[in-house]
Structures are given as structure tokens and as C-alpha cells.
Length: 559
Image 1 (cartoon, rainbow, N blue to C red):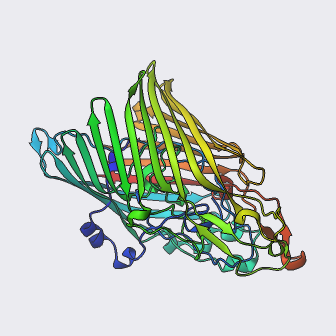
Image 2: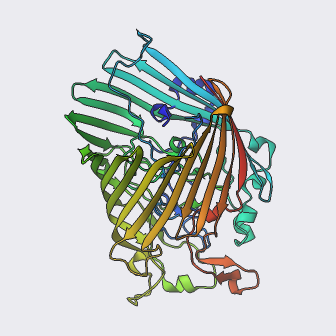
Image 3: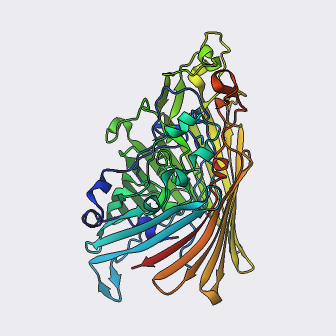
């Protein structure tokens, strides 16, 4: 799996030289479905990037959605070279190849290189073939990584990128975002008042850490990715780094993970490895730019966050791995924060039933603590690989229906109820007909379930990744399929990558979505009292983007 996972982005000095000063003012962010600071309007290093914000006092619309959960998922990275809605989304590949071996670093051809510099130049261009048809992305990227080898026992690593999207210079923002079509059930004034943020002029330090290789111990200190999962793209146990939804789940695996400032220590004793994590850097899922074609949730100003770099609020993790009965087994515990905020709603039933818009609704998105007990295993069977993950998650909140069963005039439980739940997933990697297949199934199970919970008790997904090398053409064909079974929606990504030499690649593919859109609250109807009508209540993820189907090409030069 790509070693880019270790490549922390841009050397600060180089990023400053290559990006205009305005770029640095954008920073990074966090938040999704009920995003850490957000309330869903659509639906997996550390986080950065401004999440969408919406005033807490708007009348309920299909965008003011109570937080719900869908099993969490990561999109498997589509290979460049032949070879992580409601909270949570079903699972996909979480590559675990980011760690550097504890051996003579920087030693090549018998000579030690104390400084190594690499990176790539890349153009990503996408064209939406649903109305309104237009180029939605013409992004030019410079990614740099630097490794400084400090003898045989230490190294310093940094990576980062800067990019600019020319589509916004060549085409109208409203045409690119197409919100008047995607939000056709919203009042016109709502659509016109949407912000117009762009995912452009960005510079970001991705990784920056020091590795120390000591007898019986490895230490990594700094901004980094930590991957505990073994399934391709599926987030069951692998919930350490939050996700960047700036382009939904379409970017490559590491490109939509958010690195975190972390202290990681690995102790080795025989066949046993004990890993400890301390994460004082608290970041959460990052939403797409406000008003953009990929926006799914909004950030509310009232959202409360735990304080970063305060030991009282830090995240902690421990993981033990060893061979057992022919398999590689891992046991873990992670004391963390929910990356989606819990959307507490102190709202009266009268306001809910009102036919007139109600302003200043008391909605208080808040990040809450959860604990995760995890188990992973991988085992070779006849040249194929069986692998699985299991997690028991405590104290998570789930959104409930707007009901008043106790008769006090307000939504019960402030709109949220706390329950433990189980996540599990299993996958099998095998080869057939010259192609590699990686199917996987994952599921969430809510314990002590009540029908008031908006999310189904059993929430399942199926993922399939196929990779077929075409050696005579120096190419690789890949296909990614994600099916959210409960939501009856599907994402398909076929892609062909051509290797035009040792440094240059060209790829072409498509992003295709099937499914229904989310509906919450009420929809706009000019003929109804108050111009609002009741609609079927449903939370969806991929179906929200069924009008965003597109084809794309990529040109990449690595150095």
C-alpha cells in the first residue's frame, strides 16, 4: 500500500514559498454528519479545514437533520501504479503500511543518504454529466515530502501539499455547486442565502514527526496517521484519525484522513508488540466547503468542543498484537471523542408542530466521550487472506424521533439517547483469473434498542474492490463498489491507470451514485400553509449525491 501514508506533507518552508500568503489563512478543519461541529445537511492524521456553519436558529428544513449513524467507512485507495450522515458509515480498506522498518534508514546502494526529497505534481480534472453539465474540478497539486536521516537510530520526516482549483476561475460557482437542483425542495431564499466556499488555494502540512529506533522500542512523535484496522477501507476498529469530507469519500485513502499530533510508542517483546497512543490534538471530521456540491451537513455556532492540548481531554489508546493459532491477532482499547457531535435539541412539541417558521431553536451540538474495545485478526488460508474486525463501543448517543411520551411538552431525552453498540466486519482477499478481489461485509448493531432511534438496529454494508493488472498495456484496471444495504444506495468507481514510464501516470474513471436523498423536518411547498409540508423522514448518505455523477482524468508526475 502506498508509502505515502508515511509522507507527511510539505516542508513548511517549501509550502510557504509555493503557496500565496492567503492560502495559509484557510487552515484545516473537522466535522461530519452530525459533524463535530455540524448538524447534517447531507452525509473516515489530524484535522484541519473549516466545517460548514449554519445559524442554530433556522426553521427546520431537510438540512437541519438530527444526528444519526451509519457504520463508518473508508474508501479503498485506487492504485496509482500497477501493483472511513449520520455518524459512522459502513466499512472499506484501512491500509496498515505506514510504519518504517527499524533498519539502516537512508542506506541505498551501500551509501547512506542523509537527506531524501520526493513528491509529485498532479492534475485532477472532473466533469459532471448530470445537469447542469460542467467541469467541477481542475485541481493542480504539488505534494512534497522530506526525510532527514539522523544516523541509524533516528529520522525526521515531513510532508505536505498545496493546490489550486482553476474550475472556479473558468466556470460559475452556482453551476459547479448546482445547489438549486440538489436542494430543489428548499425555499428559494434558503438556496440564495447559501455561502459559496471553495476548496481551493489550500496549503497543508500533512505529516511532521520524529522517529526514534531504540533497543526493543520504536517511538514516533509528531503529526501522523495511525491505522489499527485490517479491512480494506472499513472503519470498525480504525477510528483514530478523523475524516475530511471536502470531496465526500472520493479522494485516495490517506488524502481524506486528517493527521493528528500524537505520541506513539511500540514495545517489542518476542512475538508480542504493545503500542501506546497519547493524542492531545483534538480534531474532528471536517465537512465539505459550505455551499459546495459535496456539502452534506452544516456547522452550528453553538457547537461545543473539548479543549485541545489539555491532558484532561486527551485521547488515549493501547493495542497488543501477537501471532495466535496461525493468525495475527490484535486487542485494543481507545478512549476517544465521538467525531460527530451529539445534537441535543431542547425543543417544544408546539414548535415542532408549528406551520410557521421558528427561529432560534435551542439546538446544542456537543462532542461526547466514547470508549472502543477492539479485536482484529488476519490469517492466510491457501494463499488467500481472511481478515476481520470487531469493536464494542460504549456511551454513544443516537438521535431519536421528535416525541413527547412523558408529556412535559418537550422532545424526550433532548432528542438523543445513549446506547452501547457493536461493530463487526469480515473480508477475504483472493485472486482469480489474474485479478485480485477484496470483498467485505460490515455491520453495526445497537444494543438495548428502542424503535424511537432513527437509525436501524442492524445497519449493514457490503464493499468490493477488484484490481486487474493489464501487463501488455502497462495498465491496471480497478473497480470499487460500496453498497449501503439499509439505505438501498450504491457507489461505483471504475478506474484505469496507465504507467507511461517510471515517473508519469495517466488515469481515467468515473464516480457513480445511486439512491434517494435525505429528508428531515419539512419540505417547501408554495401552496401549503406556511409554505411547509410534512415529508417522509429518512436519513441517507450516498443518495444525496445522485446528481453529482462524473467522469474524471488524472495526470501525475512523481519525483
